[in-house]
Amino acid sequence: MKEITPIDVEAALKKGTQRTIIDVRGVAEVAEGIIPGALNIPLDLLEFRMHELDKDKEYIMVCRSGARSGRATQFLESHGYTVVNMVGGMMTWEGQVE
Image (tube, rainbow, N blue to C red; front, side):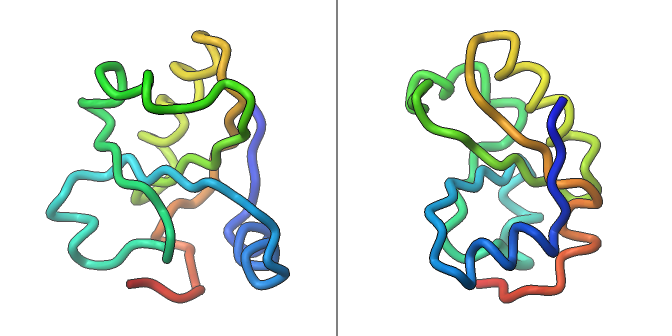
């Protein structure tokens, strides 16, 4: 499983690098703050919504600590998607939130 640090994600966003971030936390958790531009698909709905994703794109998976996003990364990889897990999750994110 590929991994990326929150610092590298933030640096890419500041450079304007096109990154698609998927936050797999629940709606109540996301209400506390989400990375600007991230798409919220709760982990328990990912299987039912993965058809919304493009297999030709790379996705960065995010959750609170990195555990759920790690499971989401493995799940999507097993279905042919290109995904990277943000280690440490939102607990270690120091960038902007909306």
